[in-house]
Image 1 (cartoon, chains in turn green, blue, orange):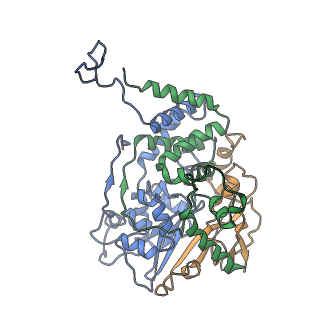
Image 2 (image 1 turned 90 degrees about the vertical axis):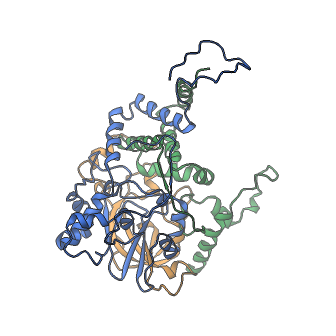
Length: 146
Length: 240
Length: 120
C-alpha cells in the first residue's frame, strides 16, 4: 500500500544517518535475525542516493582543484571516449561500489581516480599485479634521494 | 634544485638535509600517474587523446549559457528554440554538444533542457545522486553543488537552502526543484529583471551568472558575480 | 566491464549523440504527458538511479524525454534493451509530510525510466 511505502521510505531516510556497524563490539558478524528489513535496506542502499536525508545547514565554500584531480577527470573521460567503459559504469563503480564509508570519506576526485584504476583491473586491461607494480614504480621515481 | 652534498647524513651531523631531487607525491598523485601511464601503455587511449580532452576541459565555462539566456530575452523566436531544442540552440552560442569526441562528452550526454522561469515559478537544479551538470555550456560545477549536504537538503528544504544563498521568494511563487538524475542536463532561464530596458546582449550576458543558471540566484542589474564564498586552496593546483 | 568492441558506441553515436543514438529502440511509450503515475518500490540491490525518496509517491508525467538503456543496465555495459524516460512532477507536500502549508505550490520533478512507473 502506498502510504505504508511512504512511511518506510521516510524512516529509511532517517535510518541511514544512524548506520554505524559496531566495529568496536564483539568482532563477529551480526546474527541474521538481528538484521531487520529496515537495516537490510539501509545496508544495501546505493550510497549515492542521499536526496531527502537529514543534514544541517553548512557554510558553503568553493574548492580549488588539485592538478591530479583534473587529470583524473580527463583520464576517466578518455577511457569512456575510447570505449573502455561508459559514464554509467563509472558512476556505479565510483559512487556506489565504493561503499558508504569511502563514499563519504574520500575526496571527490579521489573516487573518480579509484574507479578508473578499478575498471582497468575489472575490465581485464591490466592485472592487479601490473597495477601494483606500476604504483610501486611511480612511488620509487618520486622518493627523495637519501 | 641541485644537491651539492656528497657525503652521508649520519646522526648528529648538524646539516639540514638536502632538498629532494624530486618532489614527493601523495597516494592520489601516484595512483593518477600509474593509471594514466598504464592506460596509454595498454593502448586504451593515447597521450594525444588526453591532451585534447584536457584542452576541451580548460576552455569550458558559464559564458555560453549566460549568452543563451541573454539572446533568448532579446529574441522570442530564439527563446522558443531554447525551450524545444536546447542542443540546436547551443550552436548559436558556439557550443556543439558533440565535441570533442564527435558524439559528446561521455558524462554530459547531448540532451540539454532549458527550464523557463516565470513570475510565478522559479527553478533550481540539483543532482541528488552525483553532480550531473551541463558542463559543455556551463563549465564545471561549483564544489558546493557536489556536496552531499546540498544534494540531501535542496530537494526537501529548498527554501531554506536558497535562503542560505541569499534568495528568498514569496510563498505563492512555485519553487520547482529539478533533480537531474538521468541523461538530461538542465540550465535555468531566469525572468529578465527590471531595469534592463535597451540593454545589449553583452550587458545582459554579464548579469546572468552561473548561480542564476543553477537557480540559486536571480539576475540583477549590477550583479555580475556569483555569491562570494571562501575558497579552499589546492597544494598543487590545476593550471588554467 | 564492457568486454565488447570498444568502438561500438563511437560507431552508433558519432554525429548523433547520446541518447540520440537510441532513438527508435524502445518501442511505444507506455505513458504520456499528464498521466498520473506512482513510483514503484522495486528491489534496488547493487545499483539504482531511482531515488528512494520518490518510491510510492504519486506524480504527473511532465515531459516524455528520450529512449535509452536504463541506468541499472547501462551500469554494466548492457545497452541492448532501451526504455522510454519520463520527467515526473510531484507536489512537495506529497513527498514530505513536514513540508510547510505556507508553500502549497512548490514542486519537485525528476526523471524515471519506464520500469519504475505504474498507472494510478
